[in-house]
Structures are given as structure tokens and as C-alpha cells.
Picture 1 (spheres, rainbow, N blue to C red):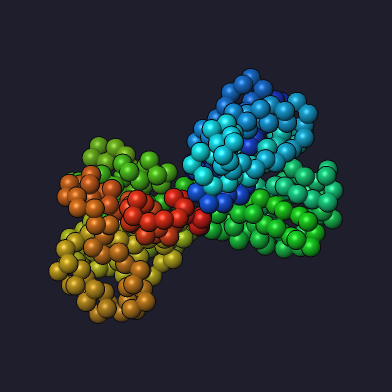
Picture 2 (cartoon, rainbow, N blue to C red):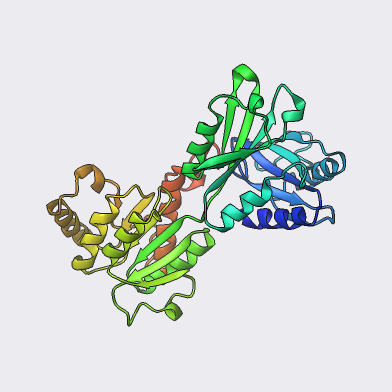
Length: 372
């Protein structure tokens, strides 16, 4: 679980003791909303609050709704947008609109929670599909636990719209939150994936990799640093990495891919200046369906790199996916500054950003495209 793991861990802790908690989740956003769909806030009967749905704008009102739903056991929805009258009350001062679903969570309302948490902690991708709207009021708040190999649900089969499982599994495959709407049946279902953290694979045990590992960790990536040189590839040199591996980069990446540990969210960056490691690594990386492949080096290095990759048989369309020289042009030079520029390009790639100053353009501050 990434990002919202604190909320789910706290939810499970309260659930295990027999408590009823209030779970508020952003299920839809419009415009410059401060949080993405899937952002959650938990309120326990003891008054503990974990997480956030807006960064502070509407938390007070959501807190009261969560307390209400704990007491009456009834889910509710609320929509928040900016208004002239109460923009600094329960409106979003930054603009945009949020739709929030607040549900009571207990062993009665969510008996499948233990299965969800056990799967997530074991590193097994799992998604929770929650009914937001349904012609039968008693179906609202029902859950379907979706795994690649099957599903388990408290939703009666006759209440499940056709295509729900396929839609939920596709979102789970992409690790993306999503709202599934079935207009002909007036049914809406929100799907929340709980998946292992996305991976950031850094090849080349140097200062630049150490700097990006620190940033990658704050971005909720599981960071691995890999290099074939044991003298440089030590855990004490990379305190922010989750794993430090001594191996040939291309061989390690090929093994991880074959084991299913590289997916469409994986970020790969090469800091190697040695073609005998760099070229085989990038040849392997560009043959995978990874989210981002970058390589450090000068313009001259890039020209030699592209020529070598072409000679190795890498197709032109694959080469267009290579970010080389890596990073956005921020003007920095130090390892820390370079790491910021690489992280900025990863973020821009992930969300479809253009990397330009927000002050130089009109329109919403936040993009509408969710990470997938």
C-alpha cells in the first residue's frame, strides 16, 4: 500500500477491536481540486483523525459527517466547491470541486477488510470496489474485494452491474483509482486499489543515485540501487534506498522483469557512464512497459548511446521513450539539484504535465489526469 497506507492500517486497527470508524474518500474531482481521487481521511470513535481529503479546506465539515455516519451507520456523500459566500468556511479556497463519500466501517459493514489488509501486506495487489449509488438504498456502501485471481463481496449478485469485475480488474492492473458509472442502472461504484509501492530502479552507485533515492522515497517509491561494483554498492552509502544490489544492471533488470516485479508504474534511471553496462541495461529497459526510462549523460553521450542502441536492434519507437539527457532544464548542477530535475520529469511524465511555470499559463493549477 502506498500513500494512504497509514489510513488503512489505522482503519484495520480500529476494525480489529470492534470499533466503528468513519472513512471519508475523495471519489471524484473537477478543476483545481487539492487532492486526487482516492485520498482518504479516517475518523475513529476515540476522535483520532488520520489522513486528509483536501489539505485542510473542508476537513472540519467532513469530520462532522464522519461522526454522524459512525452514530447512525448510514453512508453519505458531499460535494465541495468554491463559493463567494463561504469560500473560507467549508468551500475550497483553492478552487475546484471535490465529491466525498463517507462510510461507516466495522466488522458488520465491511467484513472483507481483513482479507484486504492481509493481501496488501503480503504484496498481493487488491482493490476495493464500493457502491456509491444504487436503486436499492441498502446496497449503497456494499463492497467487492477484487483480486486478479478472483473476488469476494458483500454485494448481492443481482445488485452487481454487468462489467463491474472487468472494470475493477482493469483499474487494479493499472494501480489507478476510478469511478465506474452505469447510467442505465443508476449505479456508481468507486474502485480503490491497494497495491505494492511503485518501484524506482536506479543503476549506478554514485552521488546522483543517492540524491534521487532520497527524493524517490518521499514520493512513495520503493527504491533499489544496483551496480556491479561491490566496493561502491553498499547500504551505508544509500541510506534512503530500500534495497542495494550488487549485480550487472541488465541482468538484474531482466530477472526482476521475468519475476513480474517490473510494471507500468516502474521508473528506471541509468547513471552509468560505462557503455558496457549502460547499453545492455537500456536495451533491456526499453523493451519493457515501464513508466519512465531515463539516462544521465551529455549531448555527445546521448548521440553515442542512441547509435549503439540502434545497432543493438532497439526500434525507433522504443528510443522515443528514452529520456536522455535525463531531467528537466532547471539550471541546477549539484547531485541534489539534478535529482530534483529528474524527479520533476518523472512527475510530469506521470501526470501529463508540461514542466512550465504555473504563473505563465492560465487554467487549472492541478491537471485532471490521474496517475495510472
